[in-house]
Structure formats: structure tokens, C-alpha cells
Amino acid sequence: MSVFQTLCRQDDGVPFFMEIINRKQRMASLARKLRRENKTIGFVPTMGALHEGHLKLVEEARQMCDVVIVSIFVNPTQFNDKKDLEKYPRDLTSDAALLTEYQVDYIFTPDEEEIYPDGFSTYVYVENLTETLEGASRPGHFRGVATVVTILFNTIRPDFAFFGQKDAQQVAVIRRMTADLGFDTEIVVVPIVREETGLAMSSRNALLSADERQRASIIYKGLREAKLAARNGERNAAILAEIVRKTIETEPLAQVDYVAAVNNETLEPVEKIGESAVLIAVAVRFGKVRLIDNTVLNRRQ
Ligand code: PAF
Image (tube, rainbow, N blue to C red; front, side, top):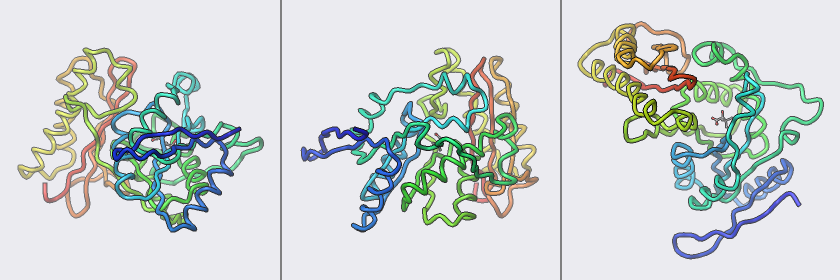
């Protein structure tokens, strides 16, 4: 049996079923049925190890859509280091328990062979956006992301798909891909959820020591300083990026990988905050853990 149902409680006490689906065909036929019933489908793709950042996406989907589907699939093609893939935390029981609290209707959690059957050889490569920033240190990463999201979109054909702003480059890649391949899915981007210290929520935060986790809040401080400077009239992108770098470098444990000021859509370097929004994106290492974060600056800042 590839499907099982969990009885869940709703706020109003009315029970409902959350179904866990492993088979792509079953997921596709269910989604077809939902569309025939004129239900709007909200889709949240994840790799599991859920934290408050993911739950915010689910909350947003719950508010906007009749039916919420969350996928949990640790996608091998987006890992360029095999050890990272093996180490990736997997705990379906606790993820499913969390999702029942948020009244998710379906969890789609296929095996690797369901997504990448024997002989699989078609990949989605989004030009221009995928070689810089994260792409530079993770070759092939975005090809893996674009490929799996294409397969998931084709299976579910959601009305809305929810992604976190924390992965700003992923958002740019998915938006481009959705437009280019003509998916009938609206991409909804949900703001970054932060810990009390300001550190952006991420599955990787669990790999930091308590001390590192505290110190890593310097990343947010750097981004805030840049926002403040922009608000005070600074328009020069290089100066704003330098403010971020200098602030982060006051923390001895932080090793800045990059601070970039780029166009929020094309990810091309920019010189000034002008008509279009500027993404200040950073990657910083704390020991073996690499953290990313960002802020978007525009003329109104
Ligand atoms: O952001 C993630 O967790 C993954 O990149 C995604 C979108 C689920 C694709 O595997």
C-alpha cells in the first residue's frame, strides 16, 4: 500500500484526513480530480527537516488556497557533495506531525525512483541566473532544483507555489523557469522568517553551536546597516555591499564568502539603487556551516 491517511483535528474540532502519497501517478490523478472540482491548489515544495520558515509558507498556502499539498523529497540532483546528501536530516514522522497542525491536506513524499526512474536523462537548465552567487560554489545545484521543481509542477499543476525569500536566487531561477516553460502556476514569495536574534531560519542553523548561532546574528546586523544607509540616501551599490561586509567582518568567527549587490530579477551586478530593486545577497561561513541571507533595497528605502 503506497498511501496512508492520518486522522487530524481541526481548530473547530471537525476531524479531517491528511494523506501521505508516495506515488507520482496517484498524486497526479488526485490533483486532476481537485482541479475538476474547481479547488485551488497551493503547493509547498520542501526537502523536509521542516522549521518555522517552511511553516510560514504552509500558513500562507492555507490562507490562499482550498487544498494544500506539501512535498517532502530530498532531491539528489541538487547536491554536488554526496556526503551532504547522505547527512541531510530525514524524519518524516516529525515533519508529518508538524504538518497536521497546519491542516495540510496531502504530503507528497516520493522515492527517488519515482522522480528519477531508470534511464532518466532530461534536465532543466536555466541560463544566466545559475552560475553566479550560490551557483558558483555549488555547480549543478540549480539544474537539480529546476529539474525537480519542473517534475513536481507537472505532477501537481498547482495554482500557486510557495517559496521563501531567503533563497533569493532560487526564487529568481524558479520565476524565470515558470515564465519560460509556460507553467500555469503563480509563484508566491514569502518573506524571510528570523530567529529572535535576527538570524534567518534555516535547517543549517541546527548545525551551529549555541555560541556560533548567537554570533551568526551579525549577518542580519550587516544587512540592516545597509538598509539604514540606503534609507539615509546612499545609492551606491558597492558602498552598500561594503557596509555589509565590514559589519560582518567585525565578528571573528565569520568568514565572508561573498556579498553581492545585484538586480533582484536578473541577478546581474548593479552600480546604483535605481528603478529596479537591488538584492544584497550574502554567504558567510561559521566553521563548516555556510549560511546565506539577503535583503532587497529599492528607491523608496
Ligand atoms: O528549497 C528547497 O528546499 C529545495 O530547493 C526545493 C525547492 C524543495 C527543491 O528540491
